[in-house]
Amino acid sequence: MARKSNVLGAIVIFIFAATALAVALPASQQGTAGNVTQPARIIPAFHSKPATTPLAATLDPKQFNDVATQNAYAMAAKIKTVLYQQPCFCYCDANDGHHSLLDCFVTDHAASCNICRSEGIFAYEQTRKGQTPAQIRKEIINDEWKKIDLTQYGTLKDLR
Picture 1 (cartoon, helix red, strand yellow):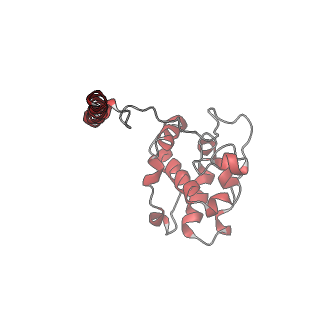
Picture 2 (picture 1 turned 30 degrees about the horizontal axis):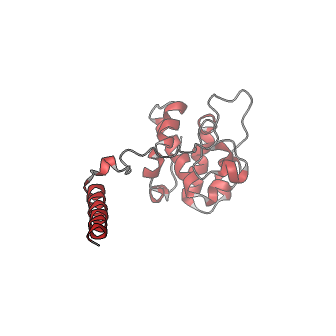
Picture 3 (picture 1 turned 60 degrees about the vertical axis):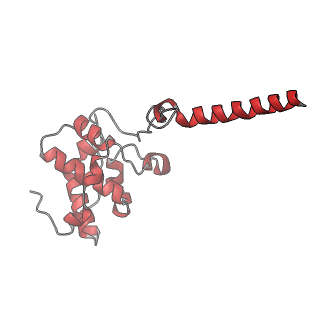
């Protein structure tokens, strides 16, 4: 009986020690977000080089009632070659068969998608600052477009 008690006591002590050790390990040694590899982010479709054929026209901004949408489509019309080289993070490539952000403005898709409008306006603003399509793409992939406040585009912009 004493032997059974000693074995049981040893098991209890072992379990207690293992639990204490697991709790005491620093978080970085337990496989927390600090050292776990995150899954690769899926980058939507885009063209890495300029188009070699004429690009389709974007829709006429005047056909939309919303001023922010009118501004986004007017801006898109001025930078089609840039939009052709940008991904769209509403993932319309998978859902609608789009090949780049330009496709969102060639159709009425961007009219109902804040992501497309924000990315398009972001690309326009960065183009005006002298950024290349590749630089803009990198910034879009890094979510810089999320800083666009569409309410700032609620009045018609003079895009001359």
